Image (cartoon, rainbow over all chains, first blue to last red; front, side, top):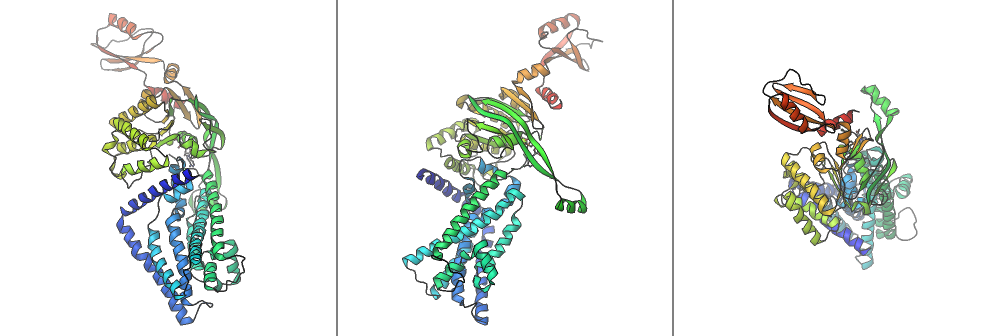
Length: 271
Length: 324
Ligand SMILES: Nc1ncnc2c1ncn2[C@@H]1O[C@H](COP(=O)(O)OP(=O)(O)O)[C@@H](O)[C@H]1O
Ligand SMILES: [Mg+2]
């Protein structure tokens, strides 16, 4: 087991090094993202500020509270971009037969696939994520006790897995249908709508859907409710800091098994 | 020892037939027409350890598909493949750790990085220890001059250099079986020569079993003790090259240059194939007579300026097999 973990770490670390080297070969491309992405999200949170100050609090959420929620969401988004961005392109890779290379090597295919191109763009989303989260947590007087820190970390891991697993499941549809790009775009929009604002502003039906069917509420809304003492609308046993990683891990297990099933349908490309 | 055991292997692809025009596009949307295509159609063969086998067939015959099933990329529709007693479908990681794979039409190297980086990653993937890694690199440098190019970015390599890189990449972990799918495609004479030499050496030194797909029959002639020919997904020939030639075209050619072209060449064992100025191509069956006897017969009757003996071109043999 330990040998196994060591093997994966050494492959992972070297792939990481290689992805950085590959991306630094084309710096102009990166610079666009370094400027554009933080600007995009800072403006997003600014807009919410303007709206809440003009039109009062959103459903009982003050601006700093929303910034706190927005911060958790954006941090998990940036982590999921770092680790799972490859899943956005499964369609292209299925059509081009790009999985051949991973399949002939004695390391897990999903692992090789994710690690093959760790995306620096993830870091450009992380910068505004950190700024907004630090701002939100200090204005709402979030207490950085040992347990709270652990909880925040668990929530971030879980939220990242929920996002990554969702991308993986939808992306894997391409193994059967040869297309999944539009599903990925759709879920991007859904993430934007459901994780940067309190879910409680939507009608109950929507809240039910995004809790039990597509559990995006666990990405930022439910954990933020608990940390901030806001009403979540649903009563769950146990703490959300636990629910988020549990949902994340279960979803990820489902996602990887769907991906592996998809690989059995993979047809490579003529050569 | 049987290294590869392929039994009744089939692979079907489902292809949708596209109709023409806007109307056709609508019809396709509502009721797509699917068709089953048998890319590999009931193939069986066994390979012994240390064999070099030429896997031949015209374009689209199903060669690459067979290779992809054998190395675990594709799942067979039915039938089985056993590599050293294990199925690549069920024990992928264990099986592929003993395989080397090269697809000539597609590189496995990282385009933007120096060649050596790809090797370093493979060293970690296959858990190759430092000693073996250095030994193998050194060995391959002797035949493929890999050190000349190891620090260049892959995108700057010529086709031949890149293929050398891909071959080294496939052999770093000393695999027991090497699958080479068109490794000499588009290469110049020099590059082909060094690749053939490489295949010969690893086969002799390590007993590596090699399956070679190629359209270059010189590759086959120089390397393969056995050939398997497939067409439309079915095996049509399987055996040593000489046997195939003996059966299908047991001929040799005597090319004679006369001082003066004779009106007619009458000899029971000779068939005139072609005439050009004073030169004549004569065909004879090699197990019925010998070149020496024919030359002496001819020189009694005619004045010969020059002559040479030619073997049957394996190209002609293979073309004939494809046609049948
Ligand atoms: N992924 C695929 N989907 C549909 N048809 C395929 C696919 N791969 C190969 N084929 C078809 O199967 C046949 C055999 O292909 P291949 O094994 O690549 O032939 P070759 O002998 O030239 O290597 C061809 O007709 C090809 O069009
Ligand atoms: Mg082919």
